[in-house]
Image (cartoon, rainbow, N blue to C red; front, side):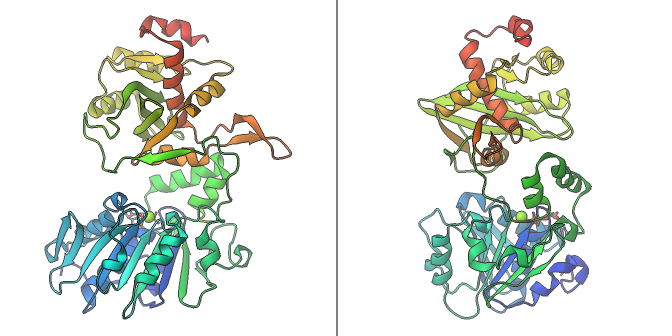
Length: 431
Ligand SMILES: Nc1ncnc2c1ncn2[C@@H]1O[C@H](COP(=O)(O)OP(=O)(O)O)[C@@H](O)[C@H]1O
Ligand SMILES: [Mg+2]
């Protein structure tokens, strides 16, 4: 072996007791980048290597998401510790086998017919994003696991306190939550459960960039900061602008030039919203197929220069004749990208452009490709402003709208700009 797995230094200290914990349910929850998934992966691999008999099942709501999350985490750990030669790994189906003892790890999505029931004598399950799993599916899965000692690990962010997971496992949050996020073990209402709360501060390996991003949520969004930075339960959001949309597509893998996930429908164009240090630059591909509007996240990154944007667009296969509709607040950037050979227009602005654009979007059945993680996050958080009595106003809160703005630009362009003519730049800028 290249690495000594009994070396405590390989682990973030706070997780070590869980290596020896044999409770049925181990819930590891909290903020982002707190090493929840990494530790779950370490534990699953150690069981696989050390136990005489071990069969772990990786479970997520959607099978297609497992490959890029849990499965990838396990691969990363195997590689990091130089253990590659001891494992055989297949992708179809997803399976990791430890060659020395034949123990293996497989995957099941709750969207697929092959249920966990059909798996012979499993010993453990790791639910990733456990809060996304429906209560009925969890109960079906957990009751289907019979046999000797079984352990079920759940990792998640505490997105919404009304979720079943909170009432099923947790006591009243007043009894354990601390406002600064600095707390660890939570006494579960179930005697067969251990709950560990962590934040990025518990992860020795967190990058400075992640810390900066997580800290920056403090300024931009309270609810977000509480959930993803401090790992505190988020409240149910009311007044969402988009409450009816759907995730489509099967793959989460990244695109290579020219291969689109939503090849369906007619391309309306690309929406581009400029950001820089705090806000992401978002590029969204928008296409239409009858009553359906397909949106696909192409780019969502901070700190991109115009040159970076151009390079990425070329790489992504955005052609010189495709329409790109960009944030008109940055005419200089638009000019620059235009000179680099892209067909970029400024978006229509004006008093009612937000409202009109959103109305146009709402006329469609909105379909979001599965890999569009940030669009999905924005849709889940983009709300109407409220008056002092809590009634929704006709104006959205100006947050979680980079990708949504990009989509809006494309639809407004379709309405106002029938013919593509870059000479209209100057006119539209003054709208
Ligand atoms: N024990 C560890 N050894 C090396 N790197 C680690 C370890 N724990 C966490 N990391 C690093 O920290 C990053 C964030 O951890 P992750 O498990 O993805 O966080 P979470 O699931 O809590 O969001 C990982 O991508 C990994 O690079
Ligand atoms: Mg994770």
